[in-house]
Length: 386
Image (cartoon, rainbow, N blue to C red):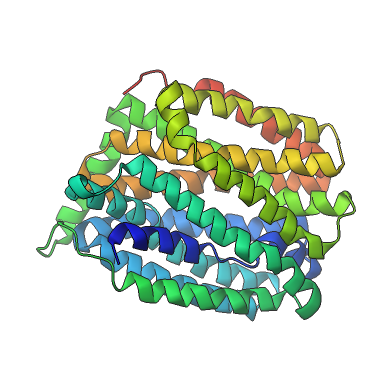
């Protein structure tokens, strides 16, 4: 099996998340408030913030492939913890384990993909094309799982969606063991050199203006989208949609995402990386504001998922721009710094979103998040085409 095929299969397997369409209503069924639900994700983000750079350094200095294997195994354990959880702190522990697994993967998996394609350029497609296809396979995998996730939860109980999700997660772990070796540092690295490597990578962020701008752009956008995505299931409940239909709605949305992702590379080439990132950042605000003014209907559900579809188009293009600013030997560390920035954004945005949803309403909170999305899109525009 070719390594690019393994990339696509990995994306398919890692998104066999049967719990996606019912996670928030599951936590609500466990009698958790919005504040508690959002704090679960916030505490996970705080842990991710602490562990992100060390895991990136480990990947750069000790091997990206090894870090990816650790990640896949950690995610299996996290799903099992969720399956056995019933209380706030149990869910916090499960979320922390999930963040640990994701920290070994985030930045590192992208860096491995980028380096592998550079080192084997003659025989493989471009990075943007591979990332776009990975997104497609990820959406197909998620659609398959989501289509039956709501049915499983409605008929067998919420915990079963996590038990079933461990099966493809374990298969993904086994697949990672077969990933090809790439050219990277082989000699052991001491603590002083590790610290120096981290400092140099952080300095790159502040020394390169475009790198700092795209880092802030991505981190704020992803933090707001993470908060908004938590509102989709309560919104569908307000729209009187039965839980067993949640998965099918997610699947329809993901199918549209797959179609849209096929054209992300074309969109980037047609309009340019800079313009695509900037315009998508602003256009995403429109459906958020419409729903925020308490527009509750089936069409509102479509608008809600439209924002997620927009993010799926934007993500590989924005990540490509980020990696164009980065040197190979620092790519995993800087990728982890980007993930760290995303975690920091979530630490700020998620508690605020949970507080306003409880204190005022879900819709008032959406208006606030829409305003943040709009002003950050203006403030952190990508001004220089590279």
